Length: 108
Image (cartoon, rainbow, N blue to C red; front, side, top):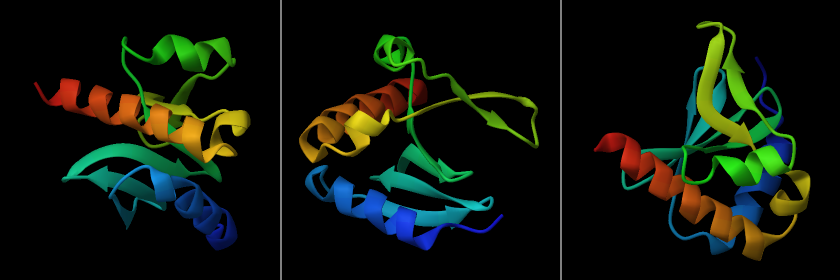
């Protein structure tokens, strides 16, 4: 699966206020990591953030659902970021913090 480099660069630009992160190409997409912990995923031309019970309601309020793995044929704990959030760097920063917190909780 090819990555839309222009869209990926837009996502990276939007994350500029979200603190340090590393983007790594993986599984035909790109994983976003902070301190070695994955909090985001760009795949199938969609940006997703890590979700758990602590932040799922915000995504569902926008009608978003779990990322579906084509290999595993099941949902993963990453939900599509609403376009209104992705376009607002300040709001995206809040959602990234919640996603990172969800990723930390999953490690415990």
